[in-house]
Amino acid sequence: MAAYQMNFNQDFTSLSVLSSTGLRLYSIGGQDKVEEIFAKENTEQIRIVERLFNSSLVVLVTAQKPNCLKMLHFKKKQDICNCFYPSEILCVRMNRQRLIVCLAESIHIHDIRDMKILHSIENIAPNEQGLCALSLNSHLAFPICQSSGELRIFNAHKLRTGMTIKAHDTPLSALTFSPSGALLATASERGTVIRVFCVKNGQRVQEFRRGVKRCVRIASLVFAAGGDYLCASSNTETVHVFKIDARAVEAAELKAIAEVAAKSDKEATTTTTTTTTATTTATGIAEAAAEEAPAASWGGMFTKAVSSLLLPAQVSDVLAQDRAFATVQLPQPGLKNICALTRIQKELRLLIACEDGFLYMHDFNAERGGACKLLAVHDLRGALEDVIELQLSESVLKTQSKTLPATLPQQSLTMLKSCAASVLIENPDPVADNSYAAILRGEQADAMSDSAKFRKLCDAIDTPTKLYDERQFPPVAITAKD
Image (cartoon, rainbow, N blue to C red; front, top):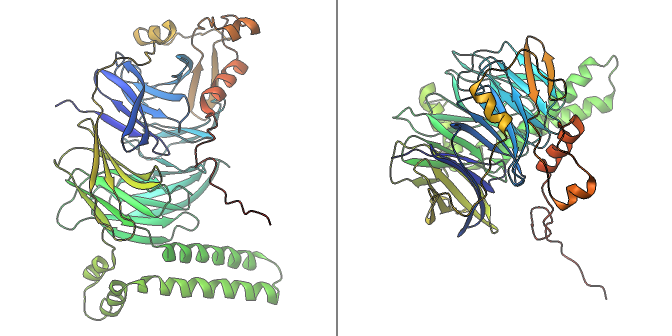
């Protein structure tokens, strides 16, 4: 059976399906509305595909050129630019401000609007899996140790190094941020325990037990679009959905505020009674909320009463870990499944994209949880027909058969140096635009300048406004006047 590489975009409205024969992009508009919007033959052995939200920007990494990042405007069939790196590209992450390229021993941060390199994180611990996570507000998390689950948070927007968190005793296998960027979920190579941390202070907010008997590898770890649930899939036949404790999150955030206030008070030369009172009040609220959070259920009260008196530490830790709120039983174990929990036509749905080439849609009961009912199955293995075919320019194809020359034309190549690594940004040979608008503007098929590349990037990144899209224009209640 041929394996398909499935990948959702950042808001779970699109899905890419990559096989040995072709690449296809699908738009997810409803339970019965999964439409193919783009396809091309996989003659270059593509191995990484990322689409930026619902925009026209798609980035590709091929096996033939593993150190080259290709940026495409797939709707206009245009190549925007190619970025070359010192070693093989292992992972690519994007949001509307930043593009992150992860190599084995370095991470490069680009401004996605012009692809200028802003910062390079060098000499990191060998990261052969290319494991990293990028939040929508540009928090970047990546492992910093091969022998344990220690990670670092980096502010990719302000380009500042953040805190270090020791999440697990064994190396990490999965990282993901909540949509707001306030929480970070992690899983280790054992895959039995999933932990959620507060990004502001590194405090552990919640801990989930996926299983006890079997150690598995987590294939997908993702928050729901609202940030109130966490979905995890592995190489077993069960997909787990965990519920985030809002009280525990609030307690962690209050504690972070109290810590900042206490630190400011300590560093000040003089302290006032008002500042001391405010700090004490914030600390008291945080402690009260922290004490209230575990006792939100009978299970929490039982654990708190029994763990310190009757049970060993390891057993009490297991009891303190929350179990799955909802589950899905898959028909076949051993396959890689990518999950998404999002609203489709105003209803919360659990999407599971399997490497067998099928997309499964399940119902999700936010009140009772339990087993999720299968609603629809979409076969995404279809042939390439009646879709847009993308032909790469000749300059891109030439780079696959010959090495990069020592000297390149100044008009088509920009050298950006950062520390020990260098990133080459190459503009492909121009393709004449024979459209009516281009003729009126008098555009010629000359080498693409930096300003032209900037315009093409912005054109690919910007998503057309949809007046009927409630995510962009929420319904507003209008009160009639007397």
